[in-house]
Image (cartoon, rainbow, N blue to C red; front, side, top):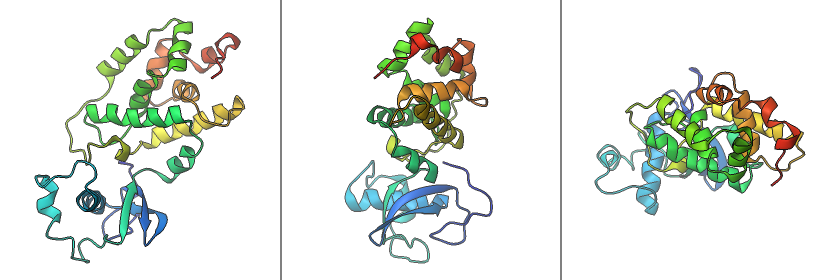
Length: 238
């Protein structure tokens, strides 16, 4: 989940603090809402129940909480909303510029985050998923770094903690603020290379330049730096 400022209030209940953004269809119009934890869970549950989507079942532990409350407008005034996705507003703008390969990597990074029992996609999850891209792997090979070694290092170093995760669907797992910043920097890299789309290699460069993430430190430890990736002989064209 993306942490929100303390003064943000949920757009649905108007009472509880908002902790995430959701792109929704409300009364037939697409909009982005600031949501509290309960109303996010309610939207997710309602979509699964109404449309048979996701991982909803009659044995879902959330059914006991929500099944008898769906008609109570004071508790769950969400029946005029079709839940679409949970991400930041900045991510939705970046998504328009992403290549199909990168969009798949973002989805795959959600799977990685879920395997670590995390409710948000951090930069190390993005990096792990990036290592499945052939151009990214080629760049690492040219520098002399094995992708398996990098993945093993991520697996050993990345934080793993047991926590409740709202969904088992990677499409509904939001990116951390730092991950969004990395993608924004990747857009800058794409423009530098006159690319119409943000490609995985642009994200790799951005990760290597990130000063605050585990993934950035890890890459630099292997000599995978922005300077190294920008060497003329490493300019690989898609």
